[in-house]
Image (cartoon, rainbow, N blue to C red):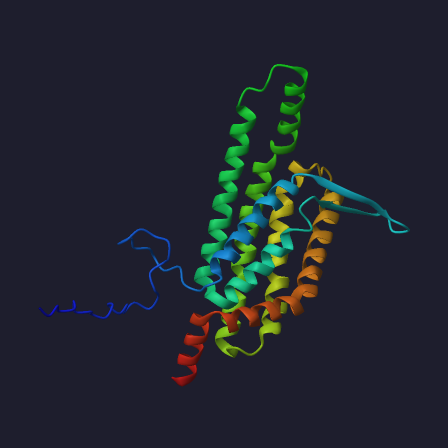
Length: 261
């Protein structure tokens, strides 16, 4: 008697743009994160802002400049904060002002949460021995004024980075893909000026600055330093932006669509 072989049907074709993720349970559905670099840039910005808030609570003095009487006063976050503006420029250039606002608000929402956590940690009862009490006093001294620095950073960065993003996006509307370096140069100076004045005015007392002269030195030095760092980083920033544009398929798709229109 002849045996009939079971019919073999081809496997169903996945009509979705992306295949289902491997390793997941059968029937599980996940959102498509896409190929965007936004999540990495956002995580980097959040990290920089939080660490800057902690470092800025410490006043730093490099002493007087010989022959000038000008004291070099800054804070412990001076080497980090310009990176937040560099990341802001990259986010605005690639993803637009709406994504930049989202990154700014997310960064400082997490920073505020961190500041609240510091206060909770300080309020928790320490070990009653000498070491526990000494550590409690150190935490109060180091993390206690951080909320003032966070508030100063929130207002300064919100105003400065919003202006920075506005300038980049408006200039890009006029010039398109051309003029990237000009956009970075113009936006950096304006954003940092507004940010530095607001931040230094609010955070000065928390850092330990008590005189008008110290405030002026702190503000001027902070502005000059941040702008110089951003300007020095522009060759690197522009190359990173161009690389991200080439490797982000969604950017290339929209660029091709805009060129064809």
